[in-house]
Amino acid sequence: SRNETIAKHVANNLKNIIKHLIALILFLVSFTGTAQIFASKMDSIINLRISELKNDSITEIGYTKITCINYGIFQKGYLIWNDKSKTFLQKFEEKRNPPVAVFQPINITDTVFFPFYNINKKLLKTEDVKPFSYHPEPDKTYTVSSSHSCYRFFIIKSVNEEFIKGFDYYDLKESKENNNGQEPTKNIYFEKNNNLMLIQWDKIMKEFTENLESENIFEQIKTE
Image (tube, rainbow, N blue to C red):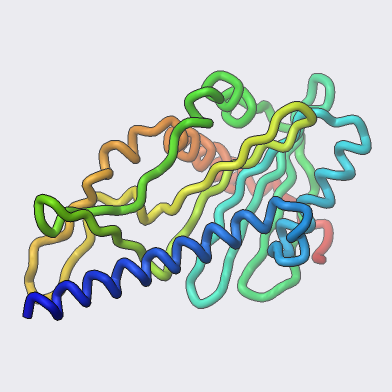
């Protein structure tokens, strides 16, 4: 019936809102000092490393991480900093169960992290990925999400610069399959989301880190 359909859509939207709020809370507490105790272990370790770098007078620091939720949390992060004329990258990895793997910093030629941010920062600060949305009827808009998804975060924590932005990869999908032989649900923000500068940054950063991983140059030094 129409009432059952409306109730189903309302329940769906409530579930999506709650899911996004949980993800947002997890994200925010990772980077606020007052709530540091609730951050993931990997975030805590990286933040301690950032404090060490700042104590060593390093002024340009940032990191990117991917967090995947699928009956547990898997995270991989890359901390990047400039020290005089050199750029270093350090890998961290947190699988379903602790401890966190910490890897030896490596010297890199950075063409994708700080250079991209510095050139595009004005646009990056104003852009936001919109949630997967569709129009069940011309005058109605509903959002869709997945309980199992991956999120990308970019963080700049330099002395005179702070930037935090993230998105859900699910929101970049063009459509989702439906049951009962219905047509796939089209994401009305598919093109807009995928043309954002933030997503271009994600693509080149992904290619850059995948190339580093393929070279087997990361040496694990400890677990915490």
